[in-house]
Length: 157
Image 1 (spheres, rainbow, N blue to C red):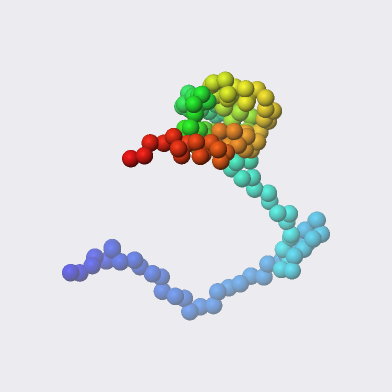
Image 2: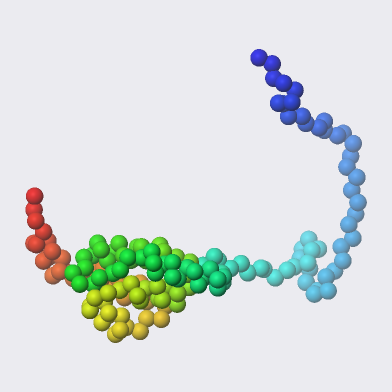
């Protein structure tokens, strides 16, 4: 089978003629600092990470109510570690990229039950990291006695 000439790429023949080079006059920058190659040294550019980048206020005003609608309620009465973990993972995924204060605005209306409300009212949480630590310590970590009781109360097959 023959290949069509249009299907094969064409390459330009290498030129044997020497390339003409033109000397470039370099001027000293007005700042005075010149690198070893004669080029001006510039200050490094600071790049913001996506998490630290400012959020558009219009998108923020839509993101908070949407996150509140999407998240399930967290009922603290009779909560298990699995339910608390599921809620926390859904909360983190839904509010990823939002500023800390907006995350707290989403979190507060989602907790229900006397234990959770007492925990929230007695804490002074101002940012996301302390919220994560406090929630984990209160609802996700269990003492040895609680784990032992749970082990004995589970039905065996």
